[in-house]
Image (cartoon, rainbow, N blue to C red; front, side):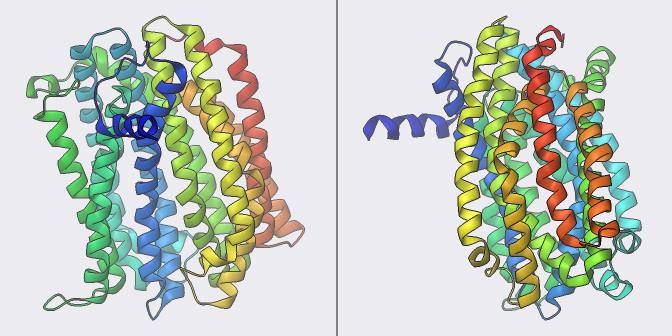
Length: 464
């Protein structure tokens, strides 16, 4: 027990480790433990909001607004994740080459580019919040009810981008503990502020759904302040000086080369989820939409830790390629696949037997509860494929080969999943159930294709 406790303490402490020299098992777990806890905390944001707004008077409108806003924000997440992939790949490769100064310069240039892009989209979201909700399938009265929530969340896109991006920088450097702690701090603030701002406390008035948006934004902002301290002031392996923000067009060119397909990769995926959310709303109505969004929030609560575990593959591939250890990079990926499959099998069992119980925490409406439980049971069928697919995608991204998973996502989501969902939901008139079925079927296909391409090994030739 003492041995395991010391290992856990080491994983959470953030001390410097040479991941190109440690045993593969130790390297995967030292990175995976804080990364899983980091992603678990990211998923808590949505669940905390969902719990409190699910008990508001207009809970149907509130749940739908939170879900649809998160679906739209997934485009922002895609940009942040795409840029963070570029940061992780470039920083990891430089750290593997034992060049931390160039890693820091690369990180600064990624921050510079990302801030400019996200700021423009953030302004657009603030101005057209209500129209965005209506476009997503929300009724005019529901859009009017939730527009302030959407406006605040869209306006905080820069904060969301920084939270994802800076954590990507630390993950590339192998310092996953700082990334984890930033989200713990952000979530603790959100959990404290949510009931205070939603329900009111003392002189603070009850702000309902708007309070949920404010709580989340303030919590994330506190997390970003913690990140910036470690990035700009603290004595860490990655430390950015002000002079590093001077545009370096050679590095910016590399950032854009890696990040552009990475952004498209996740925009393709997130836009397909937006289409599915809109299809559920139009074929099943408000309750079906609320049930689907509840199921998605629960699914993501468990999926994000799996994504965190798969992020270990990204860091290990990048650093080992920088050290010219190609075999070790591939072995690290397969070890990560093994651990992620074990985790996702466990989650599948939980959803099959406790799905209705878990949904009951977030809504008392019988119809919403039944739809959410049904969605969970159907989507859980593909969890093993999700687990393997995540690791494959992150392995490509860690190598800097962001085009391969982009094409896989384009074909899997837009040429297969969306037509299948539309066919089942509308042509066969299965409604929301047809949409639910299309999700695990498409994920299985994407995973099989990604695994075949990974084994072919073209990613080993990518230069960053």
